[in-house]
Amino acid sequence: MTGQSEQQADVIVVGAGPAGSATATYLATGGLDVLVLEKATFPREKVCGDGLTPRAVRELDYLGVDPTGWTSNIGLRIWSHRTYPYLLPWPQLKDFPSIGYVRHRADFDAQLARHAASRGARVEYDVAVTEPIVDRRNQVVGVVAKDGRRFSAPVVVAADGNSSRLAVQLGWDRRVDRPLGVAVRAYYESPRQGEDWIESWLELWDGVPGKSNLLPGYGWAFPMGDGTCNVGLGITNTSPAFGHTDYRTLLRRWLDTTPASWGFREANRVSPIRGAALPMGFSRSAEYRAGLLLVGDAAGLISPFNGEGISYALESGRYAARHIAEAFAAGVRTTAGEQALSRYPVRLRAEWGRHFRLGNWFLKLIGRPELMKIASHYLLPLPGMPMFVHRTLANLIDETPGDIYDLLVHGLRRLVPSV
Ligand SMILES: Cc1cc2nc3c(=O)[nH]c(=O)nc-3n(C[C@H](O)[C@H](O)[C@H](O)COP(=O)(O)OP(=O)(O)OC[C@H]3O[C@@H](n4cnc5c(N)ncnc54)[C@H](O)[C@@H]3O)c2cc1C
Image (cartoon, rainbow, N blue to C red):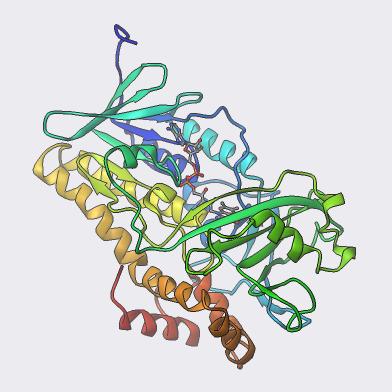
């Protein structure tokens, strides 16, 4: 549509998922004029496991979001081939709280977006962004919406999720050398809905563990505290079965082997089985270039270790906002401002580059069922190993080492290059 006046802002954020709302909250708190454009009207469904680890809870604390009253959990139960699980409480650490939560994404995302608005961000729903506006110097200077409206800003943030239309339109492709996952989930009425542990399965069997077929992927069951459990499974492209599997059938085959008393059966399923992609381990070809920053799934920042993306989405929003604020302080579109923005990808790598490198290797290893079997049958039962795995997978490691697990993981990271 021509002839409409162009809306302006200091920063445009496309997408009001956790990454977009976190970015907007920090920027607006810092006094910048932020415009968030979200294609959906909230609350809206978002396919997710709904799990918030202590890493995500720490980010909520930084944002000033109070989770009081949400369904909490005290740790993770890990099932392997044994008939009983490993019980792994959230660790007591200096840098992280020792509590996790589950929260329906419809409510979670709506609350975060409201929070951003309460700090001064202008949040507009039902605005689908279709393309970036690029000036003659090839700088991104705004976006166009489906209804033809144009929005301009010297800095644009793509927080538009795993398929990031904005990034793709600029030719920032997905890196095929980085892992990609697919996960499906559904809600089941279950007597286990009020338990205070979340659970994950390292091995999925279609019968008696060890005596039936080992299915590809990993599984989870998260008690929602509302009568249901969020149950799902994920597979990565490091598994030979990736792309050749009917994930919905796989979910049913696995769940039919769980005790009937748990309720994970078709008759108790209260939602469709839905799935989505998990872009992992820095899987976008850039995180900043020419006025556009990518945060969260748009930048491919899901952890290859455990498929966790919410904490990394929130955290990347925090870093992005810091670098944008520095750019404005130095003079946006000046050399110094540009340098501040260019330090954002460097910061991401400094935080997670080595961890995600290890995670990418870990996925290659467990993609081979025979190696996964050796790991879970012989390595996992070793003394201290379950907690080491738990802490490493969830990236719950103190910056200043406080125990042997911190020391081990810091030591391991020193041995590998960043992604
Ligand atoms: C089945 C499954 C289970 C998962 N379980 C967990 C879990 O338990 N814990 C965890 O931490 N992570 C989990 N994840 C990963 C997690 O869901 C993502 O990492 C997280 O949602 C990323 O947040 P985001 O803000 O980057 O993107 P999103 O949450 O995808 O938000 C993107 C937003 O952008 C909007 N948008 C998209 N395109 C446009 C456009 N063109 N114009 C305007 N707006 C647009 C969308 O409507 C959406 O609101 C799971 C993922 C899947 C698929």
